[in-house]
Length: 288
Image 1 (cartoon, rainbow, N blue to C red):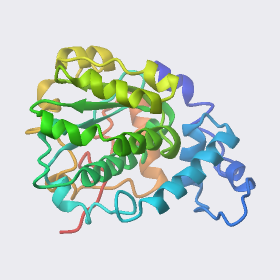
Image 2 (image 1 turned 45 degrees about the vertical axis):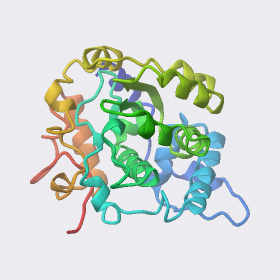
Image 3 (image 1 turned 60 degrees about the vertical axis):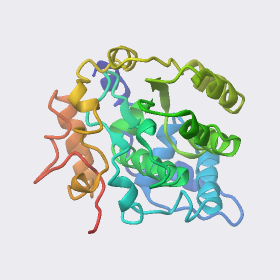
């Protein structure tokens, strides 16, 4: 909490009249991104207000969207309703003391007879976009957790394809305006190191150094420093996630909603209960 307080004056409270202007001043022939302040601000925050790096990430974001449009990008929760109902992607309402968000993907539970790897990846991107709806996540970053409970060698092979690993590394490092504070694997098989050594060349040194994998929930709680990460908040059977029954809740539809959440959080109130009106922890709306 204190870490987040220290970051607020220089980042969250930036002037609304100038916070998007820095990126709008950057120009590139034929490149016309969305000129919305809140959208541009997440790129500035994700790159610590380095305008050059933020603009590069913004261009990468649009290039990635164009390259994978209809495959893993430009898909709505409605498009992925069937996949989201499998409940393999979990955006936790709990946060680390530093304010970091927590995105958990239960890859061990994936059934490739029901969905594809690209669909799971697309659902994960939606989860990341959900997290980026809030000022807190933009400022403080996030942890990504891969739960491999129940994974088989046959299933594992899908996740270590070079094309997928390159795409994943590119997405979290160069495309999404997200500050990854740590990548964690839990319940991993004995052959997991093979996959990590495969992906290592595609990862920056900073990301590699932030990869402390562990094998038990109690240890992930210690690594991520989420003291309140109880089993019922971690279990895919009972945890709130991106499944259909959780996607009918509210969306952070206005800047005032986001500010309400952040202000209440700073005052020590629960983030979810701080949402105005009838609430659900989820930030995504889905149509039946």
